[in-house]
Each structure stands twice: as C-alpha cells, then as structure tokens.
Image (cartoon, rainbow, N blue to C red; front, side, top):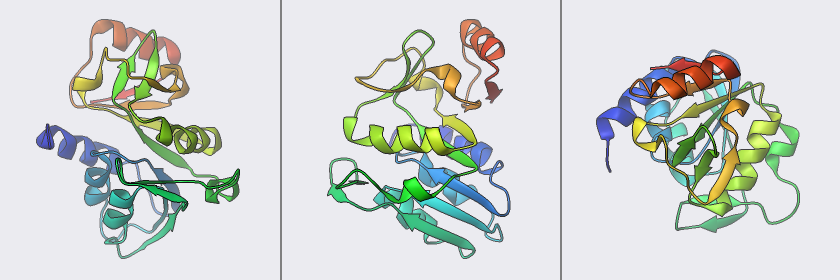
Length: 180
C-alpha cells in the first residue's frame, strides 16, 4: 500500500475527532482502517460502515457498537451495496461521516473510482451532521469518474500536507476547516 505513513498520520488526525457517544459513518478506503486503529480503546461510540475492511477494523474496538450496512458484496473494493431502495442508513443520523476520495478538485469537487460506492457516500453525507473528507495530498488536483460532492459540502478536510494557496483560499471562503 502506498503512502502508509501519511495514511497512519491522517488516521491519527481524524481519530481525534471521534468523541464518546458519537455515531460515526466510516467510508471504505485504505485510509479508513488507520482512522479506526487510532481511536482510543476506551472510546465508546457507534460506527456505521458498508465495507469489509472497515468492519474488520471496527470489530476490534471493545466499546464500539458496529452497524454493517448489508447487501451484495463487491469483491473489487470489498463493499456491500444495497439490494433494494432502502438500507440501514435510512434509520441512522450520524454525528460525523468520514468520507474517503481518490480525487479532490476545487473546480470538479471530490471524486472516486467506483460508482458502486456513491449511493452510500451520498446518503451518509446527506444524513450526517458533519462531513469530514480525509484525503492525503496525492489526491489533490485529481478528478476521478465517480462524483461524490462539491468540496464545499464538507465541513472539514483532513490531509497530510498543506495544499496549494488556491485550496487554502477556497476552504476559507467555503467555511471548510482545514486540518493538517
């Protein structure tokens, strides 16, 4: 896996925002397990996920109630996609949603490679009180085929290195908190 140290650092930064009694949506992706790994063992929280690797990391947390959104398993990215029109997220309102991405662009927004991930990402962002984008600096100025959301839809952007001045200015103007 590329950029392991950056992902581990991102995970620690993001995990600091998980508080006792939170209900947190955890997206799929290679950074997400590092977020979970960094959450203190004594933290009491509820986690919602739709990814096998995320679920496997969450089950190790002794005070975490895990809700796995089910459906058809997609082995290419280890996620479950809903079979019908409804899923577990219809009944849950997370405090926070940690969203991962493969591309972050001021002009074209936040994107990923897999269209199968979009339903859960969109629904989690719609229902969550706070949307947190976690993306290492290699994702900046990249556009991928599956559109997640405009960058301004996020309350916070957690990354491993200070982005360009254009990104900093955009985040200030759009009220997106930048955490490095």
